[in-house]
Length: 176
Image (cartoon, rainbow, N blue to C red):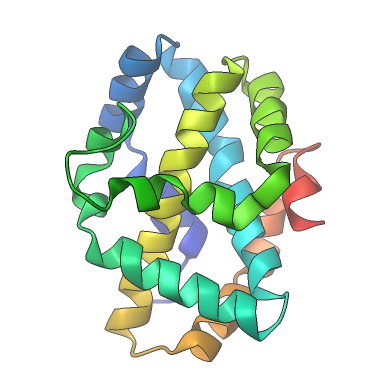
């Protein structure tokens, strides 16, 4: 019954989505799948880091999570592969990775690329899908459990050990 954020977000990137991403990005399915094993915990660690940065971080994550959950994008992650869906809010969703990582985003994309053997541009595309997907899952959970910004941060912190254990060696940058 306990909520496992890492499993929930990882589950969004099923075999069908991995296959579509590989085709869309010109990568192997194995490379995309490996990249996702690094991207999902990296994004979650980045959210943990941002949430721990004080009240503004918690409020920012809560707001982004509500936006992502309300966008309907969780039901159409494949639609974001081409740089966004046709919905008006897609550009905001695609900027969520930048909002989470700031000037570290390029370096994180390079680390994911090196880790998984995919192109840096593909790693960047996947980060830009994974961040709003993670935030959407968090927002959906927060809504279902009537969590406010503080409750959301408490939930994230309760998942910290699980998230940090899942980070591949060398990708701990996001939690620094």
